[in-house]
Length: 620
Image 1 (cartoon, rainbow, N blue to C red):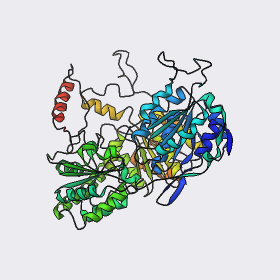
Image 2: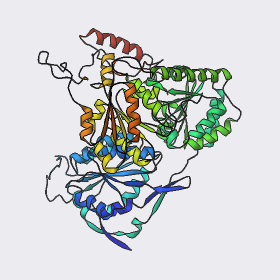
Image 3: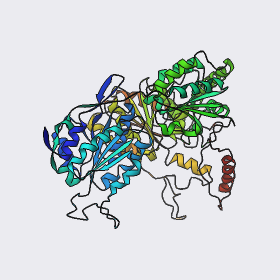
Image 4: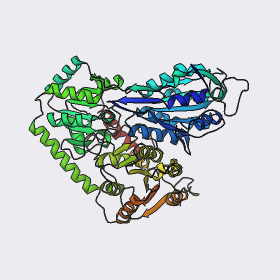
């Protein structure tokens, strides 16, 4: 049997019948399609989506936002569902590149369907065509190749019969997922073909729980028994695998303390006595104390980013060894580790049984518990309101954390907020802390929060964003209103790029180019009076309900009022950028400092930088 359809109609008909099954639970893989129509996809994918109204279409205001929304949705769904994102050829397509990079780096499945230049080549160059003297088989969509886990361009209708299963193979792979780009020329999208009807039948992709090799498990159990100071690093793979309970059971049985990456925060409740909190450059006192002394690091679902390892300075025991549990072989072998390649939940269960009665010493557990109690006291102190003209950022974080419920979700991505949140946020639910910090993409916060809300509409979702991040992509406030998906945006104005400003000062550059000021006619620099932008008014003009607060009591009142609202709400508050949370232990991050400079502060920073570089090491 054959079914005549355009290429675009066939692709949408195929996508709507793709399902995934894990642990006996089956669900649609695609929540729909998001994007913006242009001449390069309107007559193709636009018309196809019109023919399939059951396949939800969401009109965003920026193509990058569509990808962020899909990534937020996919992460909330533990990578078992996502959105397709379509755009025209040209700037619509290239707008998606930042989102594509973020999704791939964070190991999140997103399907991109950008239009492309004409496959027929009758007319060239066409509008928005990038020409190359090297080849006619060249367009701006080739830019997606390095940020995609799978990339294909369709020139003939029958090619999708073999391409689409490959698309789904990668998107549903626990180890190899990320951005998949299927580039379809605008004329090819509209071409009709008699496709095999089997292509459009329901297909269910089974997501396996891969066990680790038994011999490797035996070696891992021996390695743990021989360790005097073992430490677990819980990464995002713990949560994607839904292995939180398996981790807790292992920790309770063995007494091995846990530190958490940005993506892994929430693997254990914040008040579990053996949870030492944030790891690495933005780590807590206890986490960095134990990391420094550990003789065995057990990495679970982590890719060991430079923040997690404090740029390879966190693990200072000369005899430290690594044991990695990861579904991706690429990550499992990092740091010269003994690799347990497999599903985190399955491997942790098997490892728990093999360890039997093994447990760390009472003194070791007691030290970790003392750090846990002490840190929670420090958090309360840091978030305590201080009398003054404006509150600090940590006070705002504390107010939101104390107000939010057990199932509420905090979304953030970039700036100075992630470091404070990593240390200070008291996670009560595995999905309660949603930070995009693999790519740390400014502008992710609002569309990412929209994706989170769409994935689980019963939860209250708080997008916490600084003024710099807000100005990147406030447009998706309109999309949230359009879709009837209420999010609460905490808009913190510290009048500039606070994170980079602080980093600039730390390397002796005095915050150059990071504060929002007029150009000074006398100096010629951006050091004039503060710019007068009213971001609260901007949010209001986009349709959001806005509350302004100038202190923590007013902010708490705004939180209560915002929870009662049924539409997207913005709470605007200004903070003092100077009051920040200190780093603890080996909380270093490798940011190169100029080797020569006329500024004494830069010279001093260079000396300190070189001293810290001495603590870096290879793990082979």
